[in-house]
Length: 289
Image (cartoon, rainbow, N blue to C red):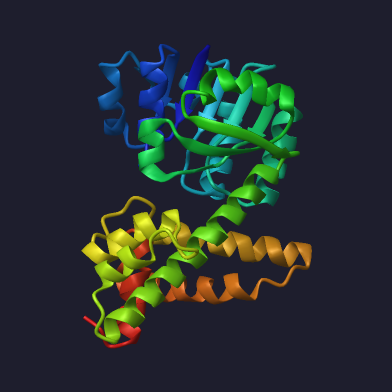
């Protein structure tokens, strides 16, 4: 299978690396051309334009910043013309469900199949091939895509087009809300004189334990906020969740509160840090260094 990968950021690069290591024919494009360099020794072929990369592919994977960028790339007339009729596009970016449905309709209209298949697991999951992949579309298209996706993680079809993005919003709601709960709880303990690291250790294994506590809680304890999943991206996802809730007539008060907290953190110069840096915003509100 020949695979085009469009977008080589924090997630796209390790994903493309795994596809190269699996022996697939990998064709890559990125707006910042220098990001393709680490893949060249692994056999990837780089192109100056997305259309050139797409034209080589049976399967095109997009891993781009947001829905607007995905639309500008996928629905660009040159790129639409370059896509092979009957080929399959798998958008693994995190975008709004409504945008995914629009992209599906536009591609199907020109004879190109589509899956929305966002992921969870962060850069570590991308590097290790253990991503959770939430797919919207048809089972037959997902079965075909598994020739590539199996090297990236575990994929589950959750419904028709747009439902992969809906599941990703659910994931990000849970992640964003739980990060807030962990940060607030650890800071409360710190304010009261407890050792945050020891509190984390004490509640490990109980009902409050979670991957968020273990991964993001440890980052909070160590004050390690180097970006893996950026604060700005978490805010984008929370806003997409609220927009989608509004479209469905669904009241989401917990998500609304956390959206505002992430918005405040972004305004306070934390946008480029890891999403666990919500800890910093809550510490600031409580006068804690």
